[in-house]
Image (cartoon, rainbow, N blue to C red; front, top):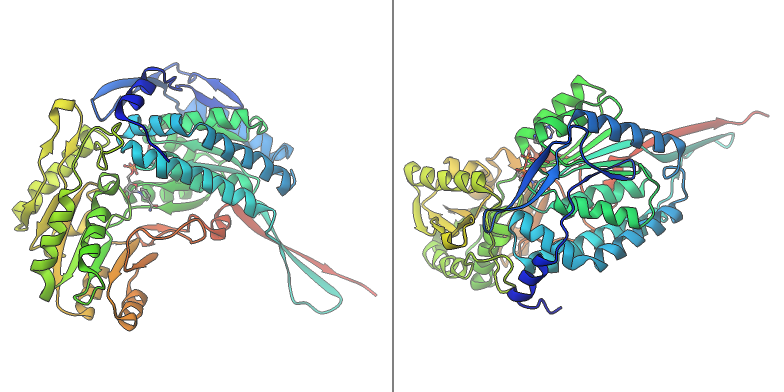
Length: 499
Ligand code: NAD
């Protein structure tokens, strides 16, 4: 599709109405405390909007409403076909309002309008549509019993599901959770990140327009340590689906243990290895992909290919190709459709990235290019993507999730060495392997302790494939039919016939 010009998007900003209220019990409301918090545009550091700051009292209201509507069955006992109809209507409304949603996403967290409009928003609509279409095609099971018995195995919605999501793909991460949760018949409370609440609030308007029963879907903007924590500790929240950092993920497990042992599903951090063997089919293409694996979405991607393992014999040649490819990713105004690298989400995240660049140099890695703060004339938070060479896998720049465009290149000699190093990480989210040898690709893929392996490309997959992590990258899977496991309980009903 045609994306138009920067001037057109800037003009659209002038006419944009920015949502700012919480959505509780089917009503758009201020928080009980009437407190607000500021949303800042990271591309120019200017105020975008003041949004309702929810806290414990609002959590109480939302959970009470969500629980009541679940028990009444207004949504939970509707037929799958009826729920499908409402969800399809919601997906259509997302498509209809795609320009507005894309603009809100870009203004709120700094990603290029090209990505918001062509990837995030269409993918969010597609996700809702996929689960809507799936829900009336899933059957229960019958156990293999003796003739005088019947064992029915059925799935039931869990109850009140809370989704706590991050700021890097705000609407899409929300949809990965709310789409299967709603399709399965649950009531849902969405807590967006305080750094990017706007598309969640707009989504609430679309849910209202799509005629979902009031109380089935709520949006509570606010801080993690208040509203997020209160949701995670609430005795009437039955399941918690989270995407965010591993540190917060561990806290949520504790909150569940301290309260009602709610089901906790976690999509957490990553430090993914991207492994390039000397026999990769096309080194220039692999280098472009390695650059995109760390520069796409400003490197603020859980599966970013942030550890680049390069076979020793091609290190010099390959890193020179990567340098060229990374040079194409120049930070710029996210409202310009030509721009592929936007602003870092806020000053705090920019500082964290800069500190890691300093640390890498102190640890003895060689900064081959990038790493400077740039485009300060725009007033926002922009950084030139950084490439480190001579990195040891034990260095912190190779072990910690930086969540920015900082690539650590590490050399290796053979498959065994690279498998050991790739697995030497607390994380286990994804990996890339580049080789023309099918045998080697399979053998290495099998031994990597990660949830997704991409062969001869990076960032593969669609709604049909599950997504999630091994080790401290998470528990459970988003996407595909496997996601229903998180939002349903399995019931066995056993009949014994007499006579
Ligand atoms: P974060 O953990 O700081 O915050 C995520 C969400 O949790 C936010 O809504 C936040 O308000 C909330 N939160 C914070 N403290 C909380 C608490 N004590 N109790 C309850 N909720 C709390 O993460 P972030 O900085 O927003 O996002 C970046 C992280 O997300 C990275 O680690 C990244 O790898 C991860 N991520 C993972 C995936 C995945 O699918 N595995 C996808 C995207 C992002």
